[in-house]
Image 1 (spheres, helix red, strand yellow):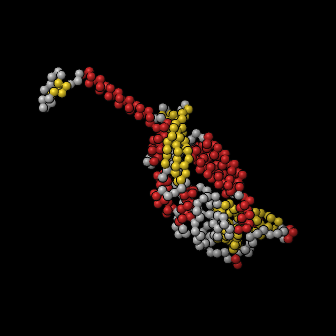
Image 2 (cartoon, rainbow, N blue to C red):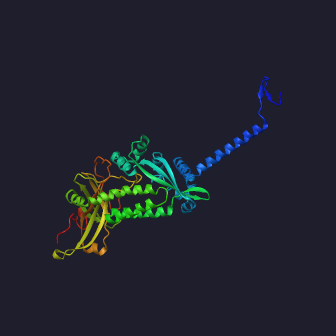
Image 3 (cartoon, rainbow, N blue to C red):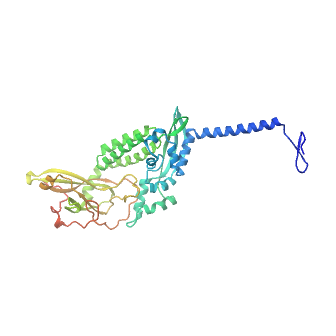
Length: 411
């Protein structure tokens, strides 16, 4: 039953009604409030801070296609989605097998945003596993019959791994009224290629070139308006620190090599590829761990007073990487007391090999800079041939010429 002022319910109780104009105003106000909330929410999502937050949320939830869709038009032209999956900004620099486990162990703390017209940046503090140190530590703990990869998952799940924390930036560009994440793939690719060249210079013991290239790359990364550029600069900076420390130790490493690092069972014979190769073993009799060892083979022609060096070739027989290798190989230095076999194919021109005699010496070494523990010594593995496959110990009787001395001849 209804009157002008009351609405009655089933118990015949009066419920005072509201005038129509009041009810209409409240409905309109509610609609306006909902619209305002939606607008504010949309604006918040389309701010640099909001977009950076969503990008990292998508990354953490493995929504890689959604991350890709948030890139600038230029970056999506430079990279297909499939190519993007091999190099995701703010993601760990790791193989797909390890990408997700390492990403789960990574923490992002989003800071403030800075705007300059249509360009913006959002600060991000990243805490993640120290991948090179983690890999070395697990390889050392694995023992002779296991791989560090077997210990990786339990390590990440338990939180028992070394960590690094560094500050990074997510850069954004406003396109068509929407903020987009800037990856700057073309420029980044160029700097990554330069880094490969710098690392190669270090492995060739060209310290001045390597250090100059590293410093230039890091400076360019720090000035690059690209997401994850500072993270890349941080990783390269850690490598540079080790290279600079190794350079400062050159006099000490030369003395150590002369006193404590020796060659044994050196012989030249044919490799499986039927080309001349050198085989032998290197022994570390001192108390320092060694990351890299280079062998020098000097070919001498003539006799007596006419003896002279005709050609020199250099071969790395131990190369312990500075970077994370995805557990693709044991990252273990030559440790004190260890004897390790080696083999390499000779590269001197055929006339030199025909007319001169080779003498094998230790060309250079690099001390280990990593604080990772050293593994327990294990039995020496089987000797290897020059192509890396297992081979029988060198037969000195079959060597041609006979076993080369590990020191240069005196004219």
